[in-house]
Image 1: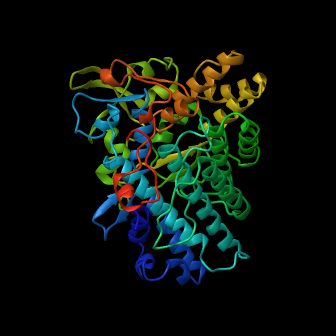
Image 2: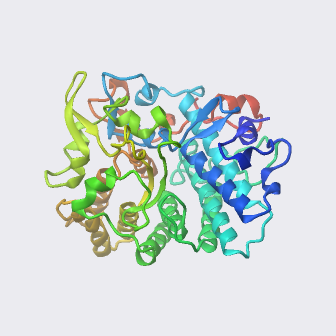
Image 3: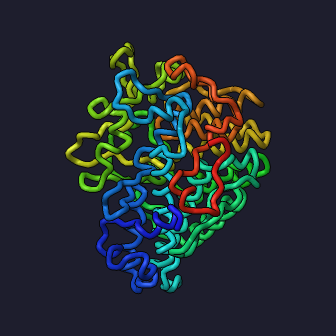
Length: 469
C-alpha cells in the first residue's frame, strides 16, 4: 500500500463524527446521511488545512500552517535564515532537499489528507437538490482543487514548461488498496478546473472568510489559469473580472492596512480577505505556525532581505508591517510583522490564502499579456496607490516586470514569490544574505521541484520519482 493510501487511511481529526469508524472499514462518506453530519465532515476538512493529524495523533502533518507559505518566500529572494536560528528549513535555504526531507513529506501527506476529506464530502450519498448540501459539497470541490493545485505546484514540472510531464496522482474515490501512478500535469490542471467549475455552480451562500465561497473558487481559478501561462490569459482575465465585478470585495484602505494584519479573526465585510485558514486559541498550529517562525517572540528565524525592504518607498504602508532592529549578527535586521498574534489572548493569526489584491494583480497581468496596457495599468495602480506607492506609467515588457515587482511587494511573506518566478521560467537570483552556494538557481534546475517522498517511492511501485533526486 502506498504512502498516499496510508495517509488516506490514517488521516483523522478532532471531530467526533470523523472518528466513528476507521477508514479501512467503511468509507466515511457512506455513513453520512444528514446535512448535520455533512457539516461535521466539512469542519474536519477545513481543520486538515490548518494541521492534519495522522497515526492516532502521533504525527502532525502540516502544509498551509507553515510549510507552504514559508517555502514560497525562503526558496526565492524575499527572506533568509538569520545567523541566530533554531535550525528549521536550513535544507531549503541551501537547496539541499532530499527524498527524505520531512517538510516535503509533510506537504505531500497533508494535502492528500485534505483531498481525502474533501472526497468524503463530495461522495456522500445526499441529494444535491438542497441548497445546504449544494453549498457544502461546493466547498469540498474547492478544497480538493486547492489541494491538487498545491501538489502539482510543489511536485511537478510547471505547466508552462511541459504540460505532459508527470504530475501527481489524481484520487477522487476511496480505495484502501490504491497504488496510483502519476497523472500528467495537464490532467491535474483539468481536474482542478473541473472541480472549481462545479464549486462555482453549487455554492450560493455568503459566509465569512474562513470558508470557501463562490467567488473564492473563482479567484483560485484565476490563479490556476495564470499558472498555465500562454494560451490561458483570456481565461485568467475572465475569472478575475468575475470576482472584481460580482464578488463585492474591496481593498483594505491605506489607513487601515496595519490594523488589517493585526486582526486575527475571519471577516464578513469582504474587505481584502477572500479565503483564509482560521486559527483560534484552541485550534492552531502553536509553535509550528507561520507566525511563530517570523515573530521575534517565537523562533523569529526568518528575516526580510535588504533587497526587498528597499523596494518599498518611504510612503508605502506595506513597510509598516516590517520591523527594524538587531538579531544575531544582523544589524539592521528586518522583521516580518504581518503575523503579530503569536501571544494574543484573543485569537491566533489566520493564514491568508487568497486576497483581493492578488486578484487585481492577476487581472493586471492578464491584460498586459493580452496587450491591453491601459486596462493593465488601471488594475495595477489600484493596488499600488492603495498602499501609498506612486502609480506606474510603464508599457509593454516593462509593465509586465512592474506587475511582477508589485506582486512581490504586495504578497510578500504569504508564499507567492517562488511560484511567480517558477511559472514565468525566470532564474532565482538570491541575495548576499543567502548561502553562497545557493544564490543563483537557474531555470531547469531540478531542485525547483520537490522530491516525491521516499516513503511513497518505497511503498508504491507505480509512482515515478522526480529526476535527479
